[in-house]
Image 1 (tube, one colour):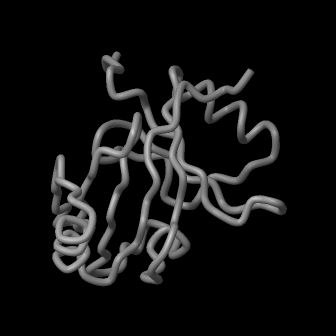
Image 2: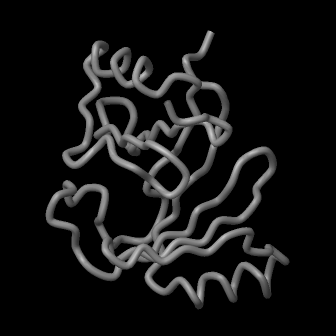
Length: 139
């Protein structure tokens, strides 16, 4: 049985968030559910419903010194796949116990709760993110 509660989102890095949003709307009829600008981090994000999960568009505007550059590489394409977990801290401990390495600067507060990224590993060339379930009530 999987340790994940459910698929949450796929993160796509784009060079121009406005143009990407226009293209998704024009060509495919996607409607943005939420748009955020995290000024201190220099990140602009747009979320789109996608089946039972979401598609996250990410535009990086400036580097963040405290976070490993692997998270902030401004190349276009799939950056990460995210999964919701019921117990964030337990899952983080299980995954690190199995040898996965947490990206420098994580865990931290994300757009909707605690998040942690793991470095790609042999056989899995994309970052995996775990995120606190959106219905989680802080302690």
